[in-house]
Amino acid sequence: MTAAQLAAEQGRFITDVAAGLNSFLAGQETVMAGISPDVAPLMDSISKLVTGGKRLRALMAYWGWRGAGGDAAHPDIVNAGCALELFQAAALIHDDIIDRSDTRRGGPSVHRRFSQLHQAEGWALDEERFGHAAAILTGDLCLSFSEEAFTGIGPRAASGTPARHIFNLMRAEVMAGQYLDILEEVAGPVRDRAGAVKRATSIIRFKSAKYSTEHPLGLGGALAGADEALLAGYSAFSLPLGEAFQLRDDVLGVFGDPETTGKPAGDDLREGKRTVLVGFAINQSEPAVSAYLDATLGRQDLAEDEVGKIRQIMVDCGALAATEAMIDELSGQAFEALERLPLAELPMSALRGLAEAAVSRAA
Image 1 (cartoon, rainbow, N blue to C red):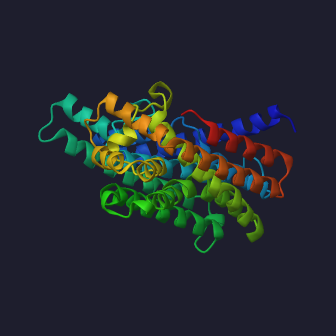
Image 2 (image 1 turned 90 degrees about the vertical axis):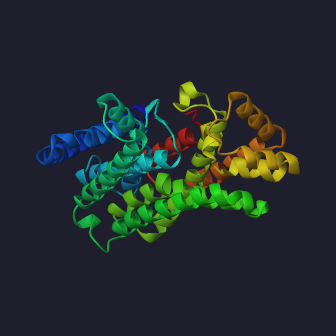
Image 3 (image 1 turned 180 degrees about the horizontal axis):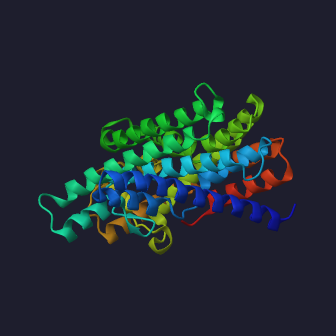
């Protein structure tokens, strides 16, 4: 097995998923056009969001499938990849509304696109309310499409199968994790500060890590008939990887380059995110500094110099270093667990490459 062979197989799968999404959405566009041409912007928003991206979740599913003996380019795993991409798109749409984020991947977020449509057409009433309402419905439609795509796999994804259990659990956990996230934003300042890091770690586990890496990998394995031992080994590798992945995302949300991340610098601070990074900063700062952070997080008008001040606090109190240490520790756990997996060279190399990219990325 060579790097070229791995890249070729992975590239074929990505191409197949893109084609599958295009075909699926083309069919849905026909259905929606039969309802009303006015529905077209919903479909256009979904199509734009599922075009491109890292395809991390689909790729984790694919190599979980291949590691469990699944055939390359089988339509079942392609459909699973499409379902995961549609689910992620739905989560991103709703997440941007909750976080009041106006940008996604360097362009307007879905709710902002609808607000701009309202403004451009000169429609009546409030453009922001219309944008939020239309985006919520677009996200719900995308969730429905995700379920339809997964059900289209057939017997491997039927009720009562291990794959169906993972898919259902993944969706429920993301919603619970999202709620814990918004709860911590409002309750965090009055809760026990000593538990801030622990609560933030629980949030990233259920809101992000499980659906980014653990469940997609397990889903692919389950679809290919993996036994319980292999699925447990997959989890031992992919859960700490997913947590490290999200911790890296949190660091980039404060310290990342907007030209690379596609989001304004300090956006997570303006959104009031109570991340592990923030938890460390609050716990490890002097009381007056902690009080300043509590009062400042979530301010939409946070100026660049204030963002810079918070960054410096995070560096000076050791919060950034502590978060980087967590990333290193979790990454080490993941790579050690990966080496214990009874995988052939191809899926082993592919998963190692995905893991390295996930924890060392700049965007």
